[in-house]
Image 1 (cartoon, rainbow, N blue to C red):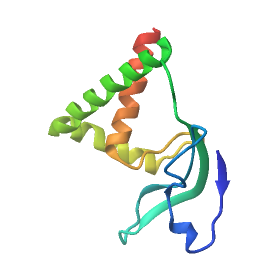
Image 2 (tube, rainbow, N blue to C red):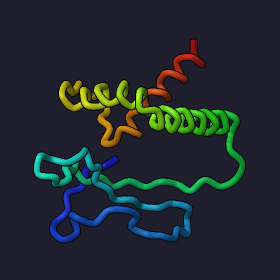
Image 3 (cartoon, one colour):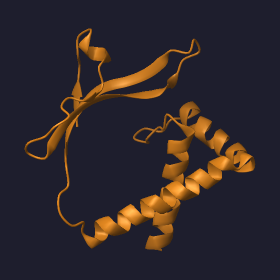
Image 4 (cartoon, helix red, strand yellow):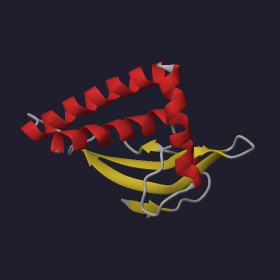
Length: 129
């Protein structure tokens, strides 16, 4: 993924650069939002541009397994976030990622994304071990 620097007003645009793809490729430009500052303004990361390929045909067995796992993870995360006691467990862990960032470690802008990632890691470890 390349780092892209845009000039105003283009720097504020995000999303797909094209909605149709003749060759099965779509170019995307985005800036991750890492939350809001103390005045409520969004805090954005650098601009990124990448291309993704639209899949055609049958999924491989490994891809099917990963898709099934991710569906399970999303369902578990939804259940976790519907339970106030579990939200109280997850919130301090989510906030800690911003207070003590580790180099090379991914940061999540939303509690939902953070919970999904943590559950996904746990289930992958269980499957491997």
